[in-house]
Length: 394
Image: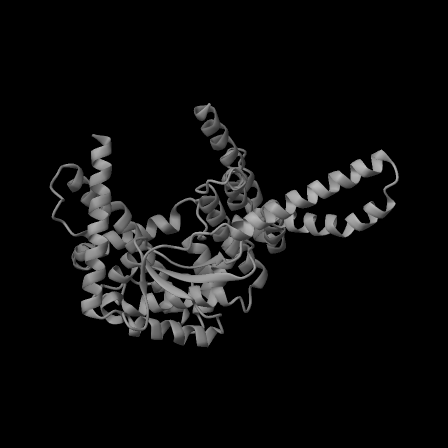
């Protein structure tokens, strides 16, 4: 039964991809930007119905109950009244469960003005520039990305807790100016000054997985059922809203141009791609191989990352990565548009020249003592996780 369930989930999750719907819609979405928003709106409806359907139904039924009660004269009328009452109570109960069920906020090492004053001052400066609603917390995580994740506070995606998630590898492998540009594009994007519609659909792209992950961990059967529904719904939304999400990523690049000229921004885009591919394809696989062979127990991957990027990310490596990014096929599984599309979007036809790493952003924006403690924690957690995986495989 479990195998059949997994097969059904896989079938539904990949249905749009196998039918190549996105491949067919891609040229239309490029020519008609409104179509991308229409598709995202269609994709958003099931998720919004799962959450808002219960409180709306409870409210409507509550308004109808007095009329049904006063008009009830026959047995059938009383049956309708009892059914409406039961449905209202059921929807109210589900609404209460949705409101009371806690949603997981992004976990990581929390930073504040006491531990990383330069970084928090930079965030405040950018938020003041773009008019972004204040970030409630800043966390460091192990991925190579910057995201502002909105977690609904009371079950419904209205009031949110805003968490700025910053990848430690990004801080350790990019120069301060590039990190600032990437942070600016994300905070500008979150401000939604020029992209409120696509920005909202972009936010839902990160909000729906929060419901899926939070609800499936609950013991309450009704909430777990909702979580299982979100398991099937999240891939559907990600596929159908892809073009609108990509529009919002292009808008984020334009926000960054308020602080960075187009030539420098092209360099930031190029450097981000080069460094990401180096870490994904060369750095992490080599370290994981060392751990599997038993020789990486004393290796500190985050501690060594900056020095390895400085020494090993050479011009040939950078050139190869950029050529692959420019000439490779468009991967419709990724929310970030292709490099060529992003360059055209900012009016710059050429990729930026790779910049040798002299100083990492982490050293510029986080105090040395604090940074060392953070790196040690990440290294310890990473090594423990890898050793557990090796033990399970053996």
